[in-house]
Length: 116
Image (cartoon, rainbow, N blue to C red; front, side, top):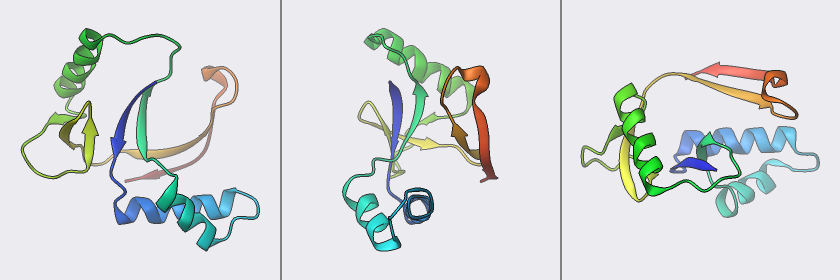
């Protein structure tokens, strides 16, 4: 798995709390808030694969992301986005999709989406 870890900013923790308390049976708002504070690790998954990823390949991924404008190298600001111990400025806009990821990728279903 290759992922970008993201800081628990207030808007993201609010979203995670709401989703957890709605989707998970027998979890009220207070229990969801505890889960977010103690267990939840927000991240953006870039790859799921049962393979080792070399440092060379990791650097290639970072370079490609940089070139695409999706993730820019740190400009020295505290951004809350970290990958391989380096800070990044991230991006603006896009969409959040809630997906049912059971089965083959071609069969994945979008359950809900929201522009950000």
